[in-house]
Structures are given as structure tokens and as C-alpha cells.
Length: 433
Image 1: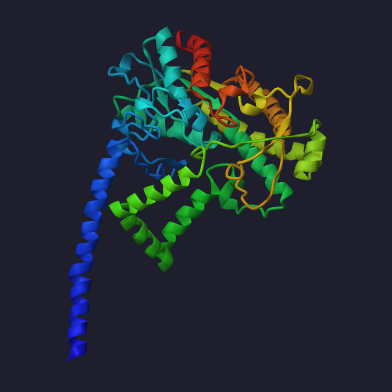
Image 2: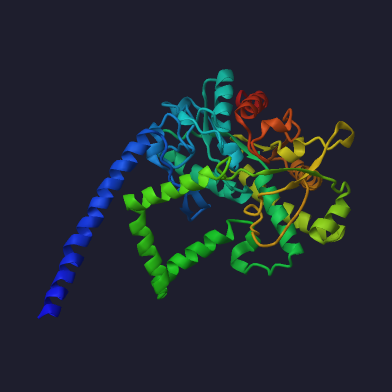
């Protein structure tokens, strides 16, 4: 009899008290989150979501739009990074599509309506020269030249349907560094003797292999993968839970307190000086364990892929506009390696996520990577300059100093402003024709 009463009590707790407790905790968490968001101190690390065409894109958070000091890039209704101006009469607008990775998008320059991002400042300077310009920011973190091509195709297939997406007169690809990271990844994988990708991954030169694996894993729940199905259910429930969001934010804040800077896509620069190699062949042998002949083989193979992507994008406007490829300045291209000027070399750190290798201990110095990037850039721009549909421009030495950068590639507000102003003076010639 006692066992029966205990069983009924257990059922009562299970059916009534436990759900009620969960409900009350959720209410309490939602109140806390609402209060914290008003203080602009709530952070949700869900900025990226899977995209079938590009592999990933921004997971837009509408709550960021009303913040005076947002902690991320604001996006518009199309999921594109917002720029302050949007034409109400697109028939008279001169449309410019900006492509690139997080450098062009404006990573790190968070502000209301994205006023401080590189794209917004470029639009502002262009509109001072021609107020019909309407720039659309099609760049996003991690996008390589293939993803730029796909995003351009998406735009051209979609802009006809929307009154805030102008017809294009100019496409500008700004960056270059994302493809260079891909090239560096190939060199590292070769030195690490990594097994080649399966055919479906295209050797990692299109969308990221992790995106393909993610889709394969999710879709496997439909073919009997019970673990995948359970993980999907748990993930769906957690994303709707205020308690989960609150605990995740507390964890994020605790981690942030242990760091001097929040690490999103920026890189940390070492501060201890070393002597480094100055000859490309020595760098290849010592850092990548390959000879010059093998290096040229990998370099030309990779650049051919990049050139195909860029060429395919450059002809998408046919004869109705221009395509301009800008190789942007980086920390490495700006670095003065003249030792007579007191130069001290430092180890490059924090790039394991860019070369997809967290286990293999890859070491190279800043001055050495400058030499490798320079060789890659010169050959890429040489190949691009031979193609009539591409206007290839080398801006790698346009930065006045390494103090323009917050890491190895992203600009601070001053650098973004000065560079966007210079670039606007160059680009306006193609918009006033």
C-alpha cells in the first residue's frame, strides 16, 4: 500500500510539479534576459547558420537592431549586412555589390546601423561623390572566392523581386586574404601528409567540408541515425529555452573575463621577438617540409581555382557593368621587415581555425608569412590581369602602418575610414561612366 502511495506521489511530481518548476524558471530567465538586453550586455553566440548555397551565412538577431551599442553586425531583412542607406527609388539608383569576407563585411566595427563598418564607410564616401549610389554589402565572414560567386548569383536571381535591391552597375570584391588562408591550409596539409578529401568535398576549395559533413549528419536522421535525431530534438528545444540562453550568456561572460579581448575572428599577435628566414625556398623547406617545385605545383593549382571563381563572377553582369577585384592590405603586406629599421620578427599565432588544423603544430614567423603571401599575391594578380572582364587592383601597400589593423587582416575604424575614402576615389570612375 505504501509503495502504491509513493508511486502516485512520484507521478504527481513528474506530471505537475516538475513542469511547473521548469515553467517558473523559464519565466524568471526571460525577465532577466529582457532586463540585461536593455543594458546592451546580453550576448548570443548564434551568429552563423547553415546555408545550402554558400555553406553558412549570418543568423540575424533582430534584437541587435535597436541596440545603441550592438555586439555584432546588423543585418537587413535579406540576411545581408546592413548599410545605412537604402534607396526608395531603385530605378534611379546605381547599384554596387560589395563582396568579400569579414574584412569587407566590417568585422569588429560594431555600431548602430553598422555606421562604422568598412562597407558603410565606403558607401558614405561614394555617395558624397554621387548620391545615386546604393551599395549592398554581400560580404560575410569566411567567404572565399567561390562563396562570393555563389552569393552574386543569388543576388542577381533575387534582386528583381525586391524594391530595396538595386540593379548592379559595379561588383567589387575586396579582400583576397580568405583565399590566401585556403592556400596556406593546402601547404600545411601537404606538410602534415593529410589524407586527401573525398571527391564530394572538392578538396575544400568550394564550401567548407564541415558544412557538407553537417548536412550529411543532419540528413542521416531520416535514414535511421537515432543519435542525429535526438541531437536535433535537444538542439531545437534548447534554442527556445530562456534558461539555456541565460546560462550560455553567463558562461560566455565568464570566459570573456579571462581574456583581454573577445576572440571572434581576430587573431592574436605574439609579442616576443625572434630571428626568421628571409628566403622563400628556406621557408618552404623549414616550415612546410616541401621543396620549391612542389610549392609551385600547389600554388598554381590553387590559384587556378581562385581565378576560375573570380572569372565566373566577373562575367555575370555581361556588358552592363564592371567587376573590380581589390587585393586589400593586410598586416603582413604592411609589415616593414627592414632589420636596419629595428624590425624584430614574431611568431604568427591564433590561425589554427583558419587553416583547419588544431592538432598539428605549425610555426611560422610574421616576416616569413609576408614573403609567402607576397609570392602568392603577385602570381594571383598577374593571372587576373590577363583576363579582360576583370579589373585587378593591388591595394596591398595602401595601409600607412600596422596600427591600422586590429589583427592580421581586419581594420580598425581609422584604417577602414581612410582606406574606404581612397577606394571610393578609385571606384567612382566606373560609376560615373
